[in-house]
Amino acid sequence: MADTVTITDNRTGKEIECPILTGVYGAPVIDTKTLYKELGMFTFDPGFVTTASCRSAITYLDGEKGILLHRGYPIEQLAENSSYLEVCYLLLYGELPTQSGFDQFRLNLNKRNMVHEHLERFYTGYRYDAHPMSMLIGVTGALSSYYHEAMDINDPEDRDLTAIRVIAKMPILAAHCYNYAMGHPFVYSRDDLGYVENFLNMMFSVPMREYIPDPVAVRALNLMLILHADHEQNASTSTVRLAGSAEANPFACIAAGVVTLWGRAHGGANEAVLRMLAQIESADNIPKFIARAKDKDDSFRLMGFGHRVYKNYDPRATIIRQVCHDLLEAIDTVDQPTFEIAMQLEEIALKDDYFIERKLYPNVDFYSGIILKALGIPTPMYTVMFALARSAGWIAQWLEMMEDPDFKIGRPRQLYIGSETRDYIPIEKRG
Ligand code: CMC
Image (tube, helix red, strand yellow):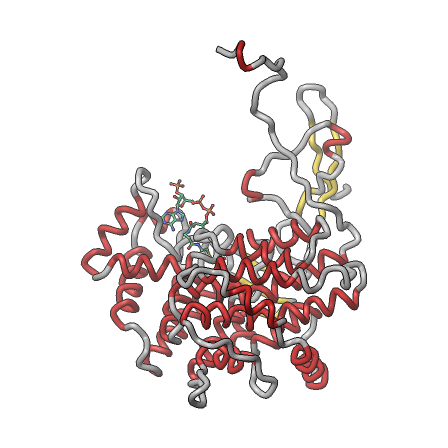
């Protein structure tokens, strides 16, 4: 018996056989490509909850079992042993690098770790209090103006160079958002520093004195970046792929990813969590906020809780939660009262039937803000940090899409529910 699903149109009795495709892991998928041609029908799946939009070999996640793999490597092992830059290499090229491969990768990045001075002037067009995500959208999009005519997206070498440019320049763009907001000078990237140390140096060093980052902060940020590097076909990654499928400039596609990530149902949640914890103010107020989250007439949701795919636990949250506790012991910049409210909120919500029944668990963003706060990164910068990390995943997914033999422009269909055809009425005759 062939691996197919029979779809019968009960109105006409016509049947078609749709192949069942199986991947390495995960639910098999029904290939419905012939559905319209054979039956004249589309599928209806708002929010793409059961639609596989592409084949991908980069990331696998199992929401029931709480598994997350990048190129087959469990996130727990990468978090324990790897560095963010090594994970970038893994996402882009499919394998962990050899030492010489990694050295060459670093050399390639170092060759590209500047941005045009004119781009720096772009920041000054923003108001002093502009949200850093709005700046990041603008400056990432502006990168497209430097690499357009001269770049051929159909040339594999140009595509690779694009990926290198994204990884090399995003930390500069992100750090400058902070420099500008603080009124500090823009700091150049340095070849002699590791990725995380260099980023912290661009953020926090000032010309008057040497900046030496705390190794605990470096480790925590490295981990935070690894945990956010890629996450399968989420909203921002799907946006990057959709924009890329129209053969748009890849830097503009990354800017589109930044736009989507800013939403508070997505990457904007880390900022929203900290704002919510500040609003809760004291542990005594937690029941009031839990009640609001459960009230259908109130739009308030518990930020940092729930996930479209993870229905048991978010493996990234398990790792980052531990780091929050470790940080609390290692450095004194952790905001103790905020952290305690977070821990009590977590405990109360996890025992509440509303959250249990709906399988709403703390996600990675519930804890990432606490870490970023301890590192001295201001709340509006949190989603910028997420975008910095995720830019590796976005560009890896863009590369994969461009190499896919099934590559075609993304063009969803719809169920039209508007007016039937009607005749135009001149304005003076309209009632
Ligand atoms: N607080 C209160 N109720 C919630 C929450 C929440 N955070 N999340 C979901 N629900 C309820 C929702 O009201 C619905 O209830 P009912 O069945 O009675 O109508 C049920 O749970 C299912 O919710 P849904 O909106 O259908 O679930 P979804 O899979 O479409 O949404 C989500 C997933 C992440 C958008 C949502 O859980 C949410 O808004 N969470 C808060 C924002 C957040 O933390 N986002 C970060 C996600 S992880 C980082 C990333 O990958 O971007």
